[in-house]
Image (tube, rainbow, N blue to C red; front, side, top):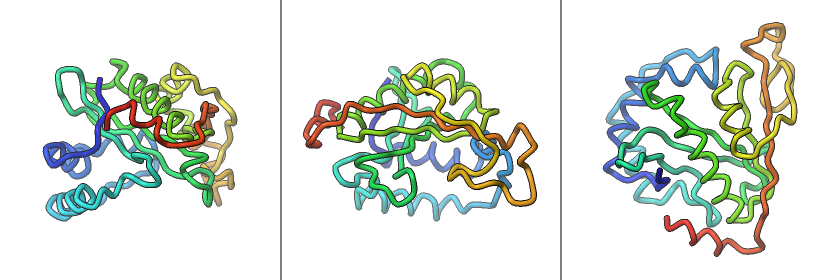
Length: 196
């Protein structure tokens, strides 16, 4: 398995995953409602992102593509500052996306999460989180296999607020936060070991 930044060669899969093969979005949000997306606008957005190195912030790749050993592009992994208002260099939530069902259940997400967590820790990120729905057992199991533990389960939004007027009684809307403490380095030069 290899993690690498998005290249122009990987945009075709990203377009398909975000405009044609979107059922994966329900795994992270049971209330997801499909919206029509223009493939050309998405392509332009991703090309601009590549050109401007838009997913490399503060010395950290905040998104990487997942490739099998055979070179098949089968997903992506990303992170963002969590909790809101924090600095991604200190504390980040990680998300894994394996859009096509044929690639799920084969350990790709688990291995990508392990590699990315090591990478982020090597960049100095001290606190890592996974935020998901209780029904997303694959994400929870991948996190636990990668050294995360369940920190909190609750009904509500990822920021801990209750869901207004609604789904708090539904198992589908129950949330889980997993946590992993990184080693953390004082400088970001350690990330060079990963070769991106």
